[in-house]
Length: 77
Image (tube, rainbow, N blue to C red):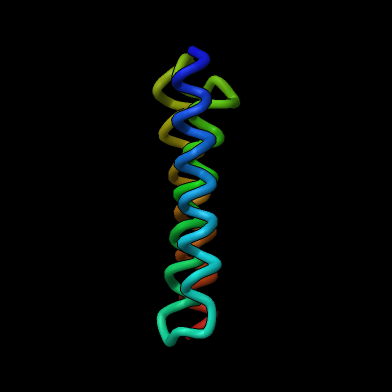
């Protein structure tokens, strides 16, 4: 479990650094928002123990955040 936590934490840091490095580019908004969605799902799945939850909760949380991000994408266009 400890190695798994470390791996996820390092992955979250890498995603954050990738998001920061894309600042100022034409695709930055979409990339940063997509990376934020990925980070939300990783944190919810791993650190909030969603991986042990019922399939309904896994699907509903992922779907909810995906819908929110898609709504932001549509509003931004």
